Amino acid sequence: MKLDGYEALIKDISLELMHYLVGQGAHQEIAEDVIQDVFVKILKMDIILPPNEIRPYMYRMARNQYVDHYRKQARFKKLLQYYLIPAAKQPRSTVNGPQNKRLAKVLRKLNDKDRQLLKLKYLNNQSIDQIASKTSKSPAAIKMRIPNPQETQKGVR
Image (cartoon, rainbow, N blue to C red):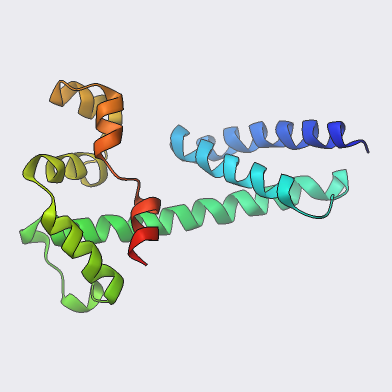
């Protein structure tokens, strides 16, 4: 199989996976991120899988990427609830750890407006567009103010 044909096959499967993840309940943005990661990893691999093996391999990768994303999101949400909503305090053992202490330190330094944006996005599950509308700001301005959980956790590890 020529490399151009291989890339076209991967692209077609990626689109198929995107529809699959969205059909399974993933948000469009998350599905796009997951599929982009899978697509890049497949292209960076040192081996070229036969056409009959690439689809199941990509499905496994997408599923694993999505589960990882979901776990990180759940952990991030739990930490935000603990540190941003005093009434939601859980036992300290559920949020203790050096990386969580660093996150707590960062969250305590946030001003009230930024705390509110985090609550709207991650605890109230509002979209960037909804938050922009509610705060009379542009979506681009909101994106710049709200950290991505993956990037935040990378810096906190």
